[in-house]
Length: 150
Image (cartoon, rainbow, N blue to C red; front, top):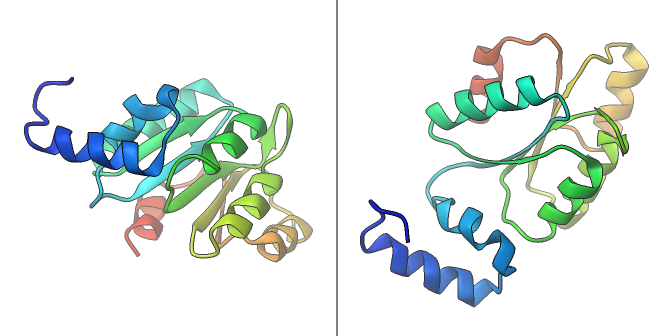
């Protein structure tokens, strides 16, 4: 048990047992704060992923990361997520597949595409599949923070 959780640790343990979270995800799940925005960050570039993880954490968001489509799809089925922050160009497929699945599982999830794709057709396809916002790399973190705070 981690230090600093106090009485909250018992609540998290009870919550984890009630929703039957797989044991390998329990350490992550215990860290999810119920009052924060839970973000699934899907990014294959390690430096970008670590930078966003750090910045989003400093803003008070709980961030779970995935590097591939397969990993992200697995997490979507197991963890409660409010915001999907997804790179579209991933090594094992297209991030739009993740967006479509996320919207199917939870129509209220906010899906934000992070990508280098910047043609009108790319924007249209992204919005048609379910992206709520589309940020072209390189993007301004202030803009992302504003989107997350809405």
